[in-house]
Image (cartoon, rainbow, N blue to C red; front, side):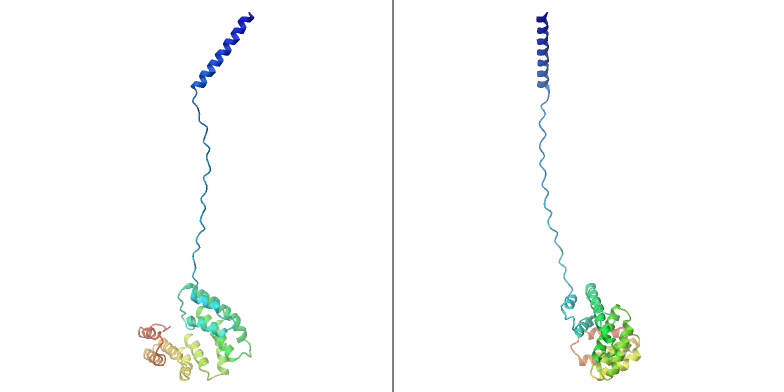
Amino acid sequence: MQTLNTKLRLLCASTVTALTLAACQQAPVVAPAPIIQPVPIAEIPHLVQPVIVEDPLVTQIKAIDRNDIDARINLIGKYARHYPAHFDNVRARRGAEAEVKDLLKTANPIAMNPKATHNELVQGFKANGIARNLDVGSNTTTNADNFIRRALKLEPKNPDTNYWFGVLLSEGGGMKEGIPYLQKAAKLNYHEAHLSLANAYLGLGKRPQALAELRTYEKLVPNDSRVPEMLDAVKQDKASIW
């Protein structure tokens, strides 16, 4: 009996082994999963920053001596001594506006001093006049009028002072009031006064007088390239030669 049981156990074991081997032979061989290598991230090149070319006027403003008030006024005055002001681009205008605001901080306290000299008063007037033409600052018209009137009292025959007082009046709407001061400056060989006279006459609708003043100026300053355009402005009856 024991021998029979032993044979049965051996038979069962053999059968299991055979079935296992058969299953192994029939089962598909599964290949190992491939190892995925990480894809290297390409380096992002540095963005090329655009080169911003600074406006020439802004460059000049930065380079000028901050203590030289006359030089600073003359620089901005090339663009905004008369109304309307003319600039090549917005950056130039913004630079001029910032410069004039800074000029007012320097020139106004000096000109407001009761003991201010003629030159200091004229500087204050010009700074405020330019600021008015650029529509920056506060009380610029009032300050300009105050400073130039005081300067005129100190030096009533000064051609520069008479000229600028005439400009203040005529470009502020008082053409008739400004003309006598511009004429006085012109008689004192202040040639630029002829241009402002032409502008004042144009504002009054007196084109023949405006043309005559421009022709006079053209003879005195033959190399001024602005004259042809100003003559056209008068002939076309524009609001201003500037």
